[in-house]
Length: 82
Image (cartoon, rainbow, N blue to C red):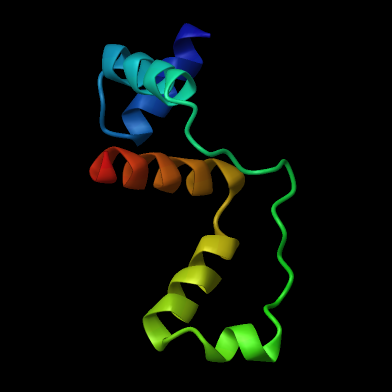
């Protein structure tokens, strides 16, 4: 487990302690998490038209991310807004 924490901490450019704290905060703050298999379905034409170009680009890139990356982004956004 220690090696895994060290590996993930290095990927996030954090110390092991910072990584552990970030993960505890995430679980204690009950941040939104994604289902095991995120939906990759395309938006219907009407909903797609409602999005501007940057929103569509963000949605496409978000859906291309792994579940872990999606959760990390959601956690980052939640910490920035909170």
